[in-house]
Amino acid sequence: MSEILDTDAHVKGDAFESRRMLLAQDGVGYSLHDTLVREGTEQRLHYKNHVESNYVFQGEGEVENLETGEVFPLGPGSLYVLDNHEPHLLRALKGDMRIVCVFTPALTGREVHDADGSYGLPEAPER
Image (cartoon, rainbow, N blue to C red; front, side):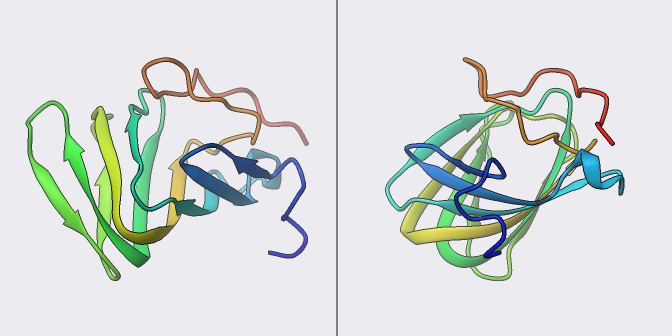
């Protein structure tokens, strides 16, 4: 982690920090992120081009599937997977949430969320 902090692989926004530990350039087919979601924030996300799996190990919150209206509580030990590219709201309600996130295909680390909370089509990995 110390090699990632304050580098291009340490992405910060108003509601989150993403420490990107494995990226497309590492050649393993997925990316692995240690993500911090700040208490009291809500993010609208929609990964149209990626499947995202998330393991919460700190804090409490919820994820709302915007297609179905279902709301799922999150806390230490929760796993949620967005395998149908669902638009969703992620809320950190009690303490900062810390989440291990896995994306397939792998992120390059240069992605930026667009207006609807998604990333564009995956880029070819650099080697």
